[in-house]
Amino acid sequence: MNIPKIYLDMCSYNRPFDDQSQIKVHLETEATVHIQSGIREGKYSLCWSFMLDNENRKNPYEKKRDMIAIWKENAVDYCSPSIGILSRGREIMQLGVKHNDALHIAGAIEYKCDFFITTDNRLTNKNIKGITIINPIDFVKEMEESL
Image 1 (cartoon, one colour):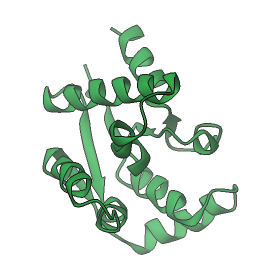
Image 2: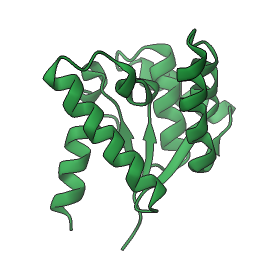
Image 3: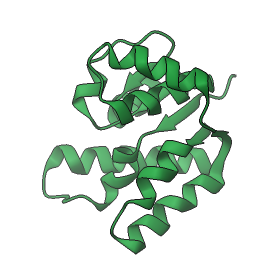
Image 4: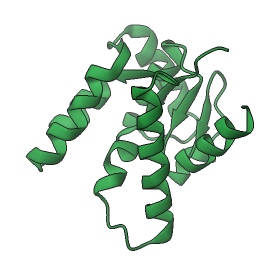
C-alpha cells in the first residue's frame, strides 16, 4: 500500500491550541491529533515547508511555537522556496486564494503531496489541480474508508 504524503497547514497545527468549546473545533482537534499519531506511526508521510517555518516563527506564544516546530523533525520532505513554487503560487492566487495560502499549496503540489490538510473552509472549497484539499475530519474518514 502506498503511504499518503500529506501537508498540514499552520491552522491545522494550531487547532489543538484553539478554544475547544465549539464542537467543530474539538472534532478537528481530535482528527488532527489522530493524523499526527499516524505520522509518528509511519502511516502518513509528512512534508514541512519554508512557509510553515515563516508562519510559526511569527507565533507570539513561545510554547505553541516550540510544540509546532517539533513536527518539522517528523517530516520526510522539506519544501524549500523556488521559482517553480512562486510561479505556481501566482497561478493559485488567480483562483482567489490568498498569497501565503497559495504558496503553501504550491509547495505541497511541488513536493508531490497527495493531501493538503486544513481547517480553513475557504480552502477546502477550492478545487486545485494536483492536490486534494481536505479538512482533517474528512481526511480521517477517507483514510478509514480506504482500509
